[in-house]
Image (cartoon, rainbow, N blue to C red):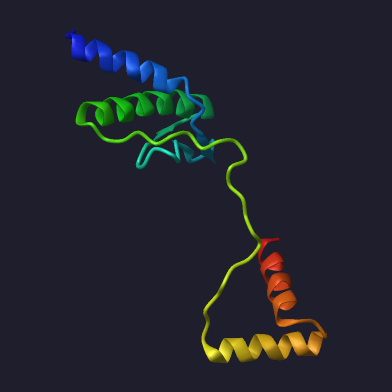
Length: 125
């Protein structure tokens, strides 16, 4: 192993200690997908959650090694609770749908905004 390889390996080990998010989803029937959302295109799969997590650590190490070798920037881990949502969105829709929703809201005796939130909440279950 050359000095450069040793240096990169040491940097990779330090980066793996940082608190990057690890997301695992799936089930025992189909298997589990694991990803590190802050690291673009860094994902893997496993038959169990544990295997997927172990494989993700390997995938992250490979991601860091490649980025360091090519001089690519390495994103910072997202601080816990950093994602904030304002509760405000803008939605564009066809005029006919807008009219239909407004008529329903009027018949329910609520604002168009409240009616849209109600329908969204129902859709989410």
